[in-house]
Length: 78
Length: 325
Image 1 (cartoon, helix red, strand yellow):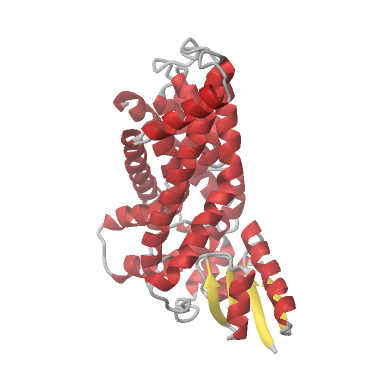
Image 2 (cartoon, chains in turn red, yellow):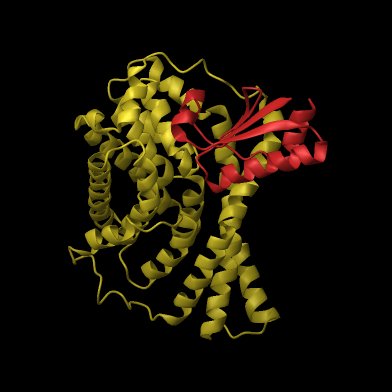
């Protein structure tokens, strides 16, 4: 099962990313464990500079911007 | 450059809608149509331009660039300059702060970047060109960069490192970098272009309501406030006008999209341009929500020093603007 993490301190952009991930999973029917990391101290362990960050299986795929549902679907289906 | 647009607005309001050019309503509507279209064209163009520049200099590259060599003070300039082209959501300021300082960038340089980034951004530049023209925009951008450099330099000299919060100090003690640079999948500029366009549209969409609201209020004021109305109260000679404008602006949290259209009207009705710019800088550069975010990495004392130094620099530049402009 894929591990998906959304990093962001809880700003609107991070929430949008998180919801887009859920929507993309629903549409593709892929099962994944989605975690939202909003604690900044925790976030800094991943060495990120800009949020929101989307990680799949501990690899950063999108950072500093909101990924839309289609883009996440494409990444998931790769 | 926008003459055709003025003709269009005249035609639409005075001919098509048949509202008299002499009436308050006609004047206000004309102003609204003209400014709204102009601003949206500029906004789309400038966010695209900045998006392209930014895709060549993503924030990680800026950090590497700043840490790679000794800069002998020039790093304040580089950080302030890159701050202007690097957009980031204000909630990124904490990760950025830590990432920069942990990467070995001096605290003052990091703060210079954090000051310049919200002060000069694509939306602000587009609004300034649309509202005040190229010359004033250039003065704003250059002084925004200088202000960030100076404030960053002063803060750097104050040796505020011990005033950072404990967990940040702990984090910095651990010298080894968390892990190697994790990079987004590498794409060529052509492959990135759709994402850049999407991002621009997103930015424009995000501020569009503020712009329309700001211009609508501005349009109403434009039609109804008599010219020279404010001159009696706020003149260049009043030494307290600039500090009061800045102190009122600091706690306010808004974006330039909403504020500048109103500023433009106030200026046309007699408020000195320098005072208005200082107020705008205070509103976008410093705010209570930003302070609350930074509180995570700065002790209250450091945060107060940070705000005080930046506010003082804005007040000084407000006086300078009033002399130059």
